[in-house]
Length: 555
Image 1 (cartoon, one colour):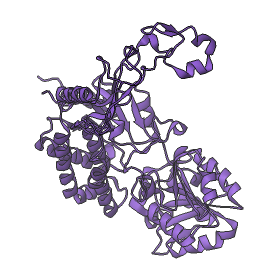
Image 2 (cartoon, helix red, strand yellow):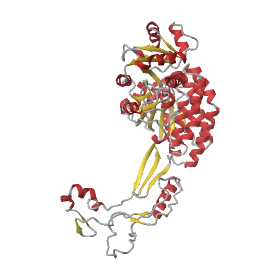
Image 3 (cartoon, rainbow, N blue to C red):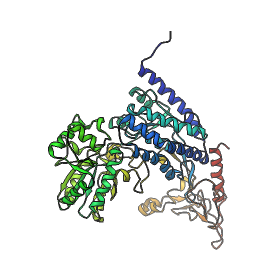
Image 4 (cartoon, rainbow, N blue to C red):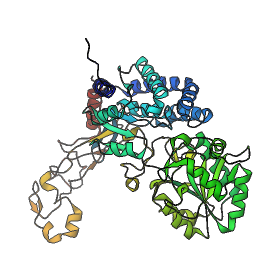
């Protein structure tokens, strides 16, 4: 009779199997060329775009978070739009050649990556992380949120099937089907997993950083939006409303609080009301907070990503039928003012201050509950931008919405769904995470000065320590305290082409290189200097790079 194991034990064994298979796939894809990877990515994007609507519908049905219309665009953002941004990024093989310094920069994959998937963005996160992982020649294994396991696993299967059909190794993209905390923990600590991309609640992110593995984690957001006195109020409110209502506020860069000044208070309030904002009375605000939070200011999953009308109905308050966002006036920050914390739904806190000085202090206080993430400012005063640029947030957005601006949709930031919070928020990265964060960078550096001549060739050493510099000499020349005139480089015609096929930082060079002071001799001063016999010129560097490229390709 076959022994039956507990569900959590089965999930642990399944996680171990996923890690082992993922390691095999990671080893195989590590040798793929730029052309092979691009072909795979394009196939993945095509499948993602074709299934964007189905995945959006499944995500809303399974989680009740957000809305189908915006989740479709999220899926497009995380596939087609993302691909257009990353397709030309240098993430494979030789990515730069500095001919002057004789340094070759090479990108290597990290191996098997683990991706943690939040329930707020269950399908778009899979598309996004799959693309950036494979762009950098990594395999990836996902841990879905139990509340969104069905739609997440479909997205995983679609991405894996598309990648394999286009030539990727089997099991290049996998996911935990027996979703348990034990399985996620097992994956985090699996020796095959080399890096974790953690997008989710604070507990999950903390667990990722505590796993002993390199982790790219993001903290909570609590973005304040300051409408300064010179702002175009109508435009500012329109941008805030578009951001806060996008997928019903499930993006962590969305606005959580609005700050206006006494001088524009009436205009701001009037404009919010005109555009679908409902200002709750003190009693109504208490009713909404009672259902919105549990255990103080921890948001209840029941109302994450819900529309304002649903929240109002659940709280027992009556609002106009065209209400898009519920707004509660607050007079402080902290436990007594629960709306001063993150609310991934269609509810905003509202503050009024006397001037930018008070707005500054208030912004810093609010950011303490989501430090390092995002804040935005609506202003026409460049000096205000300068003053607020020092706030502890990794993204300072000017005259745009937090959701679209923070994720790179309406700004020049990189398109991403994992937004680093820097050391302010306990994150290892402060940027929008992309494929460039999933590679190891190694450098091949040729010797340009003989080791025993470093001090003699160093002009700054002689400047700061002349009494010691006199004790050093150029050994081949036999002149104590003298710096060899040939310890640097020797010029050759600048039109010499390198002809390196791989993407590099410099396409041409007119420089040859000496590896030491061996060029010292008795040649007449008026004679054209000749490259020493042990120099590596541009042609030799080209040969070296091409040999490296061939080796990476297995040729």
